[in-house]
Length: 337
Image (cartoon, rainbow, N blue to C red; front, side, top):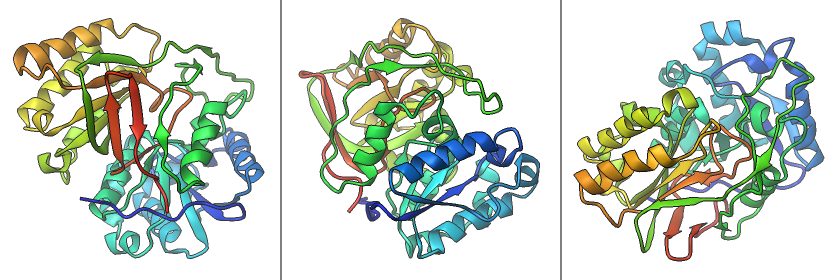
């Protein structure tokens, strides 16, 4: 299935910020952080409009998933809004889905970006045949302190403001796995020298369309094994749900559900913890090669997306390539038109 691509952003465009998962952005102790993100978007030429319910605080939005859905539909239906940015992830986006209207998305395709629990909305848009973007949330990435990381800023402009082929997704030069803290105005992330991508399994060159999110992807009840056919799966998660054991369980479930054999390859986000990938590689090899004999299946780990910083942007449905021989990962088309 080839997805509809949204129009690119231009300077002067209006974007909406929404709180579809967690209402922290509107909390008294967090508004300072939201304002940093808003200011940074304004500096690159965008007008930022907070959706009507998005700043009403976490208690209100937790109790009113319909209000979160209203904001999503308002942002898609509003002709003046050219892009939609999630403020932050969370853990109960599934409660919002029953209140959504797919027709509003189908008739108003536009940029929608976020990660973590925002994944459920990406999958919903995928079913509406709209290509969305697994990438920047406002609080943890755009409003990051001490700065909007140059790598994250580069990919935000490269993918969303540019309708040329995205090309090679290169590794960042520095990274941080520090937990986010939205309430402490003195909080600063610490960055370390990046070690680059790890081509941990497989060989050759493969192409497939991008599809993925966090490990909860496999439990989504409106996604079927057929949705994974000829896809390059990108996958990541927070440290609690991405131990070597749970990672092994996830890969096993992919195989048992008839998904693993449908894939062209796999991209794994940087671990959300300061630890080696060696144990994960061992688990991976035991399942993919030893148990299922998929010796050529390409797997690239330690990529800059997900719950670490900085991040690139991965457009759902875009054709991508893994080149194990030259150790490159590329997106072969533009994410926008």
